[in-house]
Length: 308
Image (cartoon, rainbow, N blue to C red; front, side):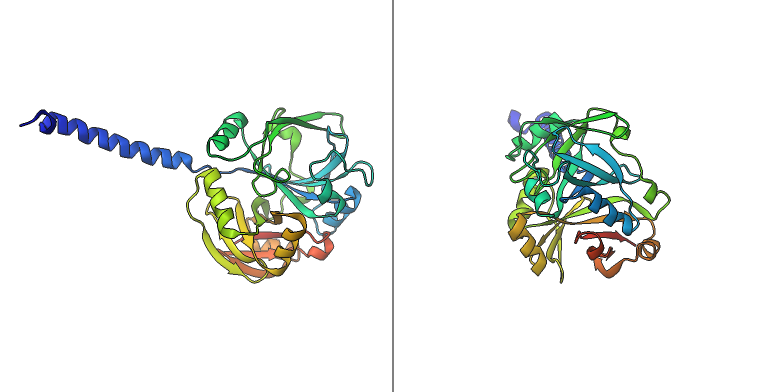
């Protein structure tokens, strides 16, 4: 009997094979990056007007202060899960130069960006680069709250376009998270839980699916078609749905490029949320109920609620 076929060698080979399979499975699981939705942004030319519009539908924003770039300021609607909706507008009317979202602000685009949170930004940047994704060098950001406290963070832009257009930009707090966001009084005790999904409008659904899978190691998404949004692709457990087609989605992508077109909030009680916020247009998306705030009252922003 040859040494290669001896029982001892076979046992070693079998052990090595088992180890290799387990390692591959472990790597595959680790490669499935889970995104933690941090916040979404809504751009407009007048912060007071944006704040009033959201107040009118029961989501009163808190003033967050001017950004360190000296160009923009913000208000936010913070939720219990520490996610938030950010309203961005210029400090001085019409002055947008120096902002990454200047065009969106000037043209009152509404939905304009999304961000995912991390505690290991540099590691995330390195992983994305190794996956073949373009990532800009991290940079510091800040804003000064009304009480004078300075909030600081680091961000990294991922992929082409403005930060948080197709792929979300990454943000890591440099000061305590609670300094950046707290639950807004207007949603305390409400049936809303926080941000759940970003609907990203794209030109080519297959190409966009491939990009997300390349960036985050995800499996194939589920797909379905909704009349108002076109064909949708959903990666179960992840905070994004890709949308392609649908008249208004295509029009918006043609005007502003690929990026967020709508946002969905989670709810603990769909019926209570629908009643409290007078939501309409109820549909079922991927076995979940979806209804919408009146877009005409919130500057044509598509904001909805998803749940059971």
